[in-house]
Image 1 (cartoon, rainbow, N blue to C red):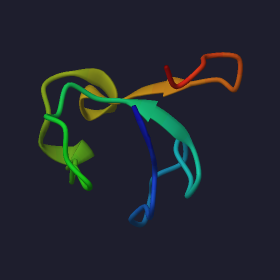
Image 2 (image 1 turned 30 degrees about the horizontal axis):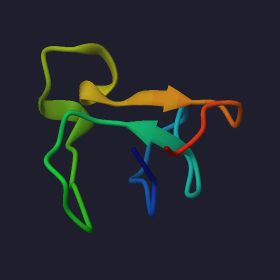
Image 3 (image 1 turned 180 degrees about the vertical axis):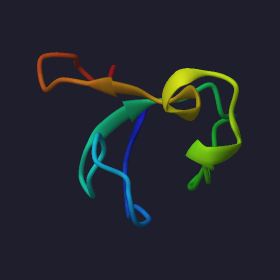
Length: 54
């Protein structure tokens, strides 16, 4: 789980601060290229504020 830090041009579903789930390994940052993925949203799943971080 993490938060989006920045988005590129044309990205509308995610914004800085959006909570997301990604299959990336535990790290301080996980860059994701939404244009180079066969899956919708480039492996990102948007989380709402009701999902806890634990």
